[in-house]
Image (cartoon, rainbow, N blue to C red; front, top):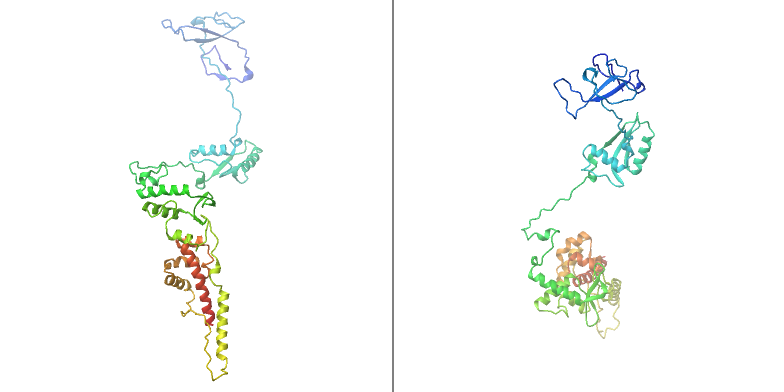
Length: 430
């Protein structure tokens, strides 16, 4: 509501309080289309609002009801522009702290234009500090911490409580939004096709021999499926069954050798080739092991026990001493001299401590013709000395030496005998 004085020139409008809506001057609003000058016209779509007092003496009749009438310009009084004022709808007070933890983190990240670079964890992080008041800032890490802090802030007066958030971008790398880069692959480079997992290998990238051997290997796997032995990953294994019923496991190495022999015309898919990998198992000298598993150790009955050899040597030495000390009773007859059977001890000296493995590999090469001297450094690193080589699993030994199982078993047997002879040498040297 505004107070307007009509008997004086137009003055500034002074606002009145809402309680002063009723004043001693009743105003009648008359709306008419009046020209502003005798020679000027007002468009039909324009309107002028005039306000005149109800008790005016300018010839305007007043009525008890508010009516719209046309008033001459010279009796219209002062022209006053009227505007309608309406109250805006006030939004209910809302608090940012009333949101959930993830929404709250997205909110203050968005204030700093970081919402597209970081994403909060569903149950944990990123870590930030929430301070409201004189008390120290509390560290927020999960939903429980946020609920506790929000409950504490809700108990304070909103007029005097200022909430501040502190976070460190340098420790939020684990929550950074990373876009997976697109691989830039040269489509014209066919040689590097296998380097990228987004393409499928083509058969043209393999050699003719590899393609031929691969097809033969597939045929061998179909023919020699074994339900008794499993593969390396628990699947159905593949074994060649000899006429005597022995199972020979077909691993990748043997399948490749068999396929190469078939391609060369030296073998058929009904019988494997005569190589050391197959003949060592077919002649019965080696124990059968399931595919991908460690089979039973070779029998120790083939080699004499160290205690037995030691007792035999001591008994022979004692017998020789007794024979040499027995006096000759009959001088007339010369008894036939019986020499006691002596143990043929090796004449080589005892190797220096720390060089036993070197001497064992050299003797193994001299006697068996198998050269494994290049693996001395590797065996030394693993501390596979001759006295424990026979106790190592054959699968592990073959993996370290990169040899077939037959050579590994031969090395174990030789190392056992060599260690026993070494102990006997040391005993005799004392």
